[in-house]
Length: 151
Image 1 (spheres, rainbow, N blue to C red):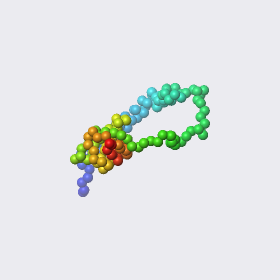
Image 2 (image 1 turned 90 degrees about the vertical axis):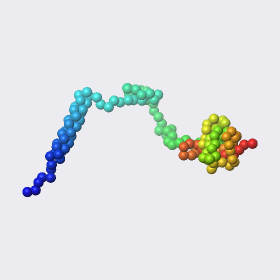
Image 3 (image 1 turned 120 degrees about the vertical axis):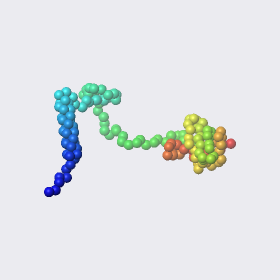
Image 4 (image 1 turned 180 degrees about the vertical axis):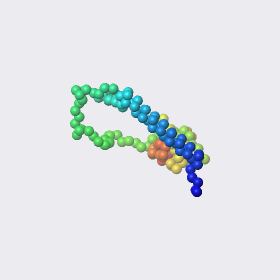
């Protein structure tokens, strides 16, 4: 006769698995019963007309009518101003490492530092030089490009 393929350890593991599953089911049912006893559901939060979160709903008299045709969907168009934006900025070289090929330029107006790579240089620069540059979006923020020395 052929021997059974199920060993003692396999039977024990299966018993443990079934026991664990039954315990989990009992805990789940107990939690459900406890929630029904309390009668608590999901708590609601309401927002009043000023944007504050409250526990009570707004009164019907406080609601105001909104004309749906006045709602603007999308991004509003940019209005052209009379003054032209000058893309060329002025700054001073805060740090530049020629061996690594990069540095930082501090804007004289905003005092913000911008990354500058050797590929964006028009002239040779060193620390402390006054320069004019343009900004361009890079991988990690704004980069100074088309950097030229000022006289």
